[in-house]
Each structure stands twice: as structure tokens, then as C-alpha cells.
Image 1 (cartoon, helix red, strand yellow):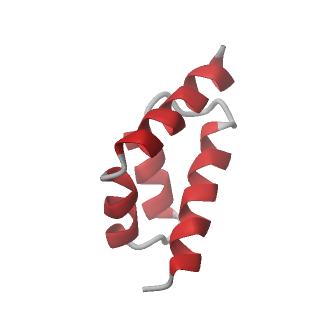
Image 2 (cartoon, helix red, strand yellow; image 1 turned 90 degrees about the vertical axis):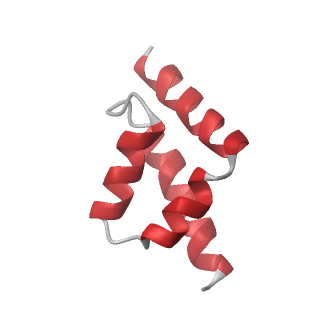
Length: 64
């Protein structure tokens, strides 16, 4: 599994969070899966608590 693909996934998660359309990480994870990202990569990102917290924070900021 390519590290590049993982970093692409993470960047896309932040892009989605910045749109203001999502409230929580789990909604973004669903959207990433719908876009065709591997569930394995999504799970890997989900296991990074700091990243999940920051993505959720981006959602909050974008919605405020």
C-alpha cells in the first residue's frame, strides 16, 4: 500500500472538513469511502487520534 495514497486520503479528509458540509470525522470517512478510498486506509487514519481530532476541529471551524 502506497504512502502517497495515504497522504492523499489525509489531505482529502482535510479538504472535505474545510467545506463546512460535515460535522464529524465519521461523516468524512463515509464520504472518503464513497469516493473510492480503501477502507484499510480510512481505518489507518481513524486510528490516528490526533488527526481525527484535528479533522473534526476543522469541521467545527468551517461550520462556524
